[in-house]
Image (cartoon, rainbow, N blue to C red):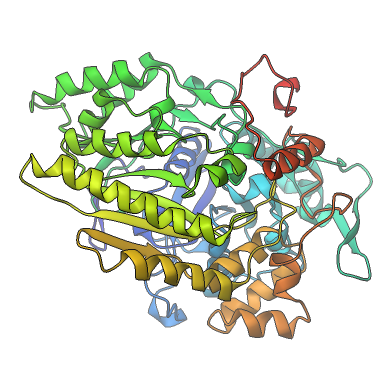
Length: 575
């Protein structure tokens, strides 16, 4: 059991520094949130598996008032400070963490902009989901960006670092730019039209014109599972096991469904092995995937785990959790499995009307949603959560009313199924604002104004929030609007992000001080000819395919799911 400052852990790795490349693995948030990230733990394991390197974890101090005297970031393993490392590798999954990156650098005494740093400073590397779709808003902060899944490229980066670091920072960055999937922002110069859009994006001589996203073709070679188990996280004392990566359902709003293509599955044998090992460390197993219920062997695994759960002997977990379930692929076996130790299970209709679900290619019917609710309650789940969005393209007032109606029907279904069991739980609605994201068919769409989104959320809350056994939560439109600006932003936003870090996240003031408009990035529709800040990335997805999907959305036409390796429609499987 690892203990530091009250932290309780099993599985932490502490290595002596002598002769090893030292990597500070930074999560720009609190320990509680960061240690819930399976990707963060996976890279920690991969780096520490090298004999010539070590990785230690660094997080931001708790609390919004991150004063210098209140606690400079220090590693969990040894208490080393950020400037004690040769490399600081950041794992960033959400746009709202961009100010946290700036917070971390300011607290650490490290100049935020790469142009102001030299060989005396650590090499700053940007990784995580945000690199998949648009690293430009924070590109000026980082020396190198690992574009895509880092399981293979992080080792290649470390190999090159060892070989070239003595030659100097400039030579090192040039060498790193030769590695497929490594983007060195200082080697590229953006230019802008009078209206503020991108006119050109010019690489330095020798730098690649585009950066191809890296992805792991065989997940069994790099199994993603918990390395460290601790109760001091969002998921508690749970051992997480990845079943699959990517989703082939083609939901048109879902950025992850596009940038993680092609969808890939781990083998049943590999997953069984990890669950067996995890059972020795934790009493609960978390099954992780874009759509756990779509994993080909989920029914077989569910039956096996249900049988195992009958025994509470050593090494046999008694609880299981699934990160995501589809209403149309939920089976009674899976429902029975997740009912063990899960008081609440979520499914995501996303839209209230079948018309709008057709627009976003969420090909599930009202009947399937209600059947899923009934299946979960009858399996012993107490509470059900439904995810919806407002502000989707083509949305009407009738679509908002359909959210209210579907929620009412789900509540009645839930209550009818629960009465026979003698206990009645809560139907929770989580309603979030639609944010147009890069690499989706909706990347050309404007985001709806915050005041209109607020009215829609108020209408839903008023209609449902006072009903018994119903709870409604939602995000804050003004913050969603900021996220939309950051998601589709360009390199000029780095100065805005730094100002927001310094002024307590007064984004309106930060944009104004840099003479930039939040509406320009968030609320403006794009035409087909516009160059995007992320166009230099090569995800394998063809832009004309996304434009066709945008047109199909307007026609509410269904696009079938991925037929991996046998279809060249989007371009990924043609690589």
